[in-house]
Length: 209
Ligand code: MLT
Image 1 (cartoon, rainbow, N blue to C red):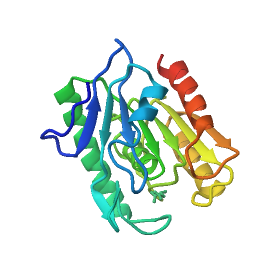
Image 2: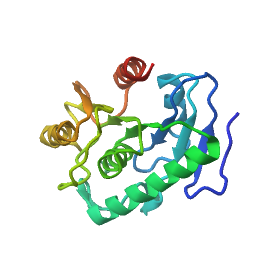
Image 3: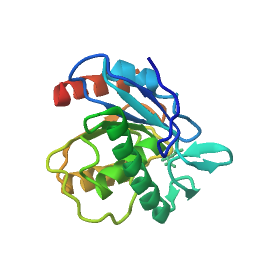
Image 4: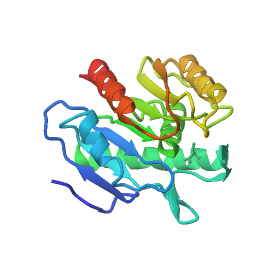
């Protein structure tokens, strides 16, 4: 069963759990994607999990995103904070509406960046996060304490959008914020591929299975 929109604050799709105890996933698409993009990935990463997949509310030349930017890699950080708060509110609504445990975010690119911001600004909102091709969403985040929540960052060693230094800085922010961090750099670019799937699936099973 796959339920479409309802009256929650973000357009989204929801797939109910089909396996007891499987952790819910919050799926966050990249620039130009939508709420349908990552549903197949979610089903492969954690079979039987409930899937909640919102659509970013910002439009950049018609392309949905989760926050504004002024150029590639140059983020409107006031908007990052605002949109992360809105996403946190949506997560709380979705948990209540669908009766869900705290979800694990799985974000790609722009979706990974808003997930990272939400972890930093509201460490209680999520159970953990898989951040694929993420970069630093906030240059100066508040001090935060994730208390050992698992975070996986999957970077691309040939990513033309996310410099290695930026991904390393993001990893340091999460380490300082008390995450149980795994950071892997794959021999690939910005696109999501089979290696991401394999590593993320094994990491999810080891961390939450
Ligand atoms: C962003 O948030 O802008 C990403 O890092 C790059 C993208 O989404 O294209």
